[in-house]
Image (cartoon, rainbow, N blue to C red):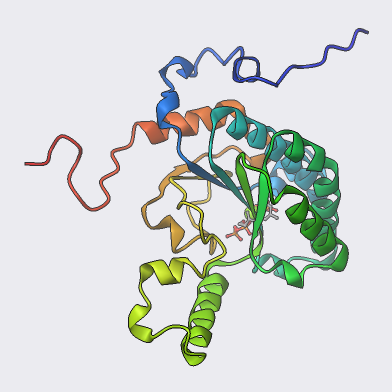
Length: 267
Ligand code: IPE
Ligand code: IPE
Ligand code: MG
């Protein structure tokens, strides 16, 4: 059979043939969120529902992430962040943790050419020094290899927990004060934000959680202060470009007040 290579190289080809029920023509390309964040949940349930083991769900989840990375690049998103492994996920059976660490390393090696081609700069949120050596080495290699890229930032949250992040920030600030680099009066919101793993990145405007769970699970507690949430019952491996568009359409319909009044309602 003839092999047809799917062309995903432009916005038009990547987003061709939207599903009829999606209001794709309503999408305002001038109001795409700068920073989109995904809590990639439901890999295990996706697999179980198909009679597969959880590992197959994690593999399918990686394929979904690849599609969302490309989609965000084509949409001109500045930052895509993705929650891949939490500080609490170490509680899972050793076999699952080992498989995840192996998949992270393998995927990163496999996908590095894509990230390079798309000019994506990778950063990690979380303590990657605590990861198994091979995973850590591959991540550090990828960090260096993409450090000069000027396109989208892909922030991968691995061994990330917001409480650990905030605790670390407090410790770093205390060290600065003890060393005389900072006085306590200078500790303001900007100083705290500057010690988070996300330092220098805009806060997420849109946080997407798949698999229907209505919680943050220790994710970006500081940065999510004014994020818009989009929850879908879709399991992460089934999340795709069209559902991403649906999430952005929902975002574009929100009234973001930031504690003030609606636009157009100021006295
Ligand atoms: C998300 O899927 C991936 C990780 C947390 C590593 P889950 O593994 O949490 O899948 P469910 O929630 O058990 O279905
Ligand atoms: C959140 O999912 C963490 C990631 C997606 C990496 P979990 O599956 O760990 O969250 P809980 O346990 O349902 O809160
Ligand atoms: Mg889960």
